[in-house]
Image 1 (cartoon, rainbow, N blue to C red):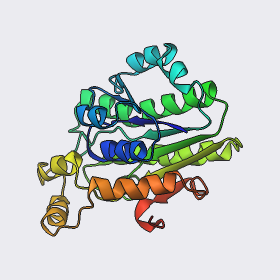
Image 2 (tube, one colour):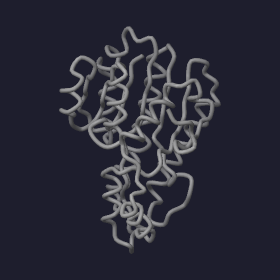
Image 3 (cartoon, one colour):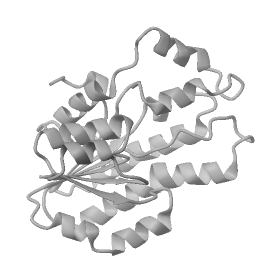
Image 4 (cartoon, rainbow, N blue to C red):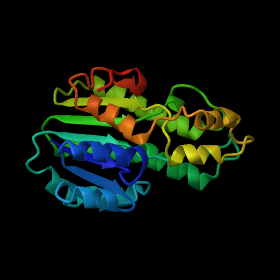
Length: 243
């Protein structure tokens, strides 16, 4: 098996990449920068490509190159974890900055769909695709219309791709729960005017209710590698069996 992880340089993405590498699974990490910690720890297993996934033209150009094709050579199976994403713009309708809106849609939706389609076209063996979704795509939160819409799109993409009934494909859009990452820190810096539920997220941090990236990643990878992966196109990590 070979894995591809987007946004592997920090937070949940880094933890997922580390959990896969720790199991001896090669990882191709895609992000705007490289991760020196993972490179030092797993020099033989980690390959990295610096790429702005929020730039569709840059991603299309990269997909037309030979890096991905070369990486796929010799793989007995492939796993894609579409982890990279951004929260903003966090504010109510009418106050959203157009550039940030376009960037969020490009990173949160366009990139995962382009990568998923490219892999399904280029690789004919067993393929597992995991979208990292969010409860924000399944419940409405004031101020999060862009983030929620992009995550809901990933959920429905997984449902429709599963309905394609490709025997070699397993796909699932997984909400990982609330994790102590940079995204949570960004949420806590948001103004209450833009995000009325701010106090709720402040309380999660203060009460120690945020999961660590490492713990969430271990549960995530356990599910990704299990026979249960893909039986449901949309899942919540917190309701799945633990390792």
